[in-house]
Amino acid sequence: MCEGRVVIVTGAGRGLGRAHAVAFAAEGARVVVNDLGVALDGSPQADGPAEQVVARIRAAGGEAVAHGGDIASAEGAASLVRCALDHYGRLDTLVNNAGFLRDRMLVNLDEGAWDAVMRVHLKGHFLPLKHAAAWWRAEAKAGRQVAARVVNTSSGAGLLGSVGQGNYSAAKAGILGLTMVAAAEMGRYGVQVNAIAPAARTRMTEEAFAAAMAPPAEGEFDAMAPENVSPLVVWLGSDASAGVTGRVFEAEGGRITVMEGWRPGPTADRGARWSPAEAGEAALKLLSASTAPLPPYGAE
Ligand SMILES: NC(=O)c1ccc[n+]([C@@H]2O[C@H](COP(=O)([O-])OP(=O)(O)OC[C@H]3O[C@@H](n4cnc5c(N)ncnc54)[C@H](O)[C@@H]3O)[C@@H](O)[C@H]2O)c1
Image 1 (cartoon, protein in one colour):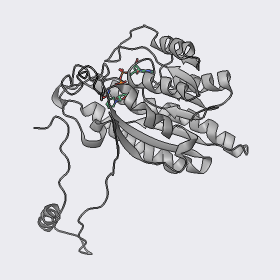
Image 2 (cartoon, protein in one colour):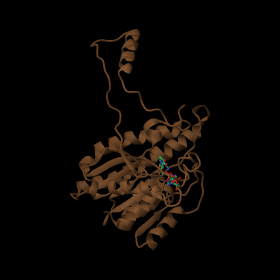
Image 3 (tube, protein in one colour):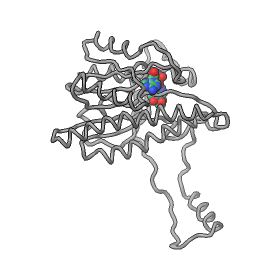
Image 4 (cartoon, protein in one colour):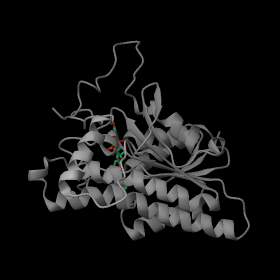
């Protein structure tokens, strides 16, 4: 499905990113495997996971190159796109996936943990997207046909909120907004931008959600394997998904769900300014006619 395409996957040294990189290579893509190699909380941990994934892809007969930069830094993001262009002369698909967690209840969440998580997820999506988009726009303006794809990684935490993950939920919700804007701005250059909210057993979830992530009994479908999420990502990242942009999918096990986002519900317009008491009365009436939101993950 991806013969001839060049694909960047960020944070592809382990977990979901590794599964995506291997799946793209198996479909014929040449893959830039990015990973800074950090611990679950983002602290340094030089174990070279990107090189290991590249070795695995090459051993299976695929083509891949490692990039070890920080995708949330201007230089890391610029050199990532340069890496694809220098090695393979083109870029077709960007999968933004890298990130880490620093979970705390809001009252205990310090500024450093807020900044680090917003930086790695939100800025770590924006910067590679910006550099890739600049190249695709230049290609389109030079008259070359562009069929570029971006797959961003949100989370159920971004869609509904997740107790104890205020920083992460805000960053992942921000990625949804970024996805909508990028899809609207980049469509004219031949770039499609979608987002996924995955769930899988990785170091991010295997302890925090141990029960839900438990491995299956012998011979049963391993619903929580990260490899289950990758087929949708590969399709979104391929030519075959032409016409699909600005959409959000949940992907987990054997299930794919199209998420339907904010849209106007019950509304009232009195054609003049409300008093606070009248506004409250109207709001209560509208709420009683509305569908209640789904609760955040972990809410009592
Ligand atoms: N596992 C799940 O169930 C789940 C659910 C929802 C969303 N997600 C999202 O999926 C993505 C992948 O998560 P995962 O579960 O595979 O986690 P993971 O920890 O296994 O993999 C994340 C990778 O990103 C790398 N990374 C971190 N900061 C980086 C940086 N600045 N530059 C480059 N690489 C960096 C890490 O070294 C790591 O290898 C994340 O964005 C995560 O928030 C995961």
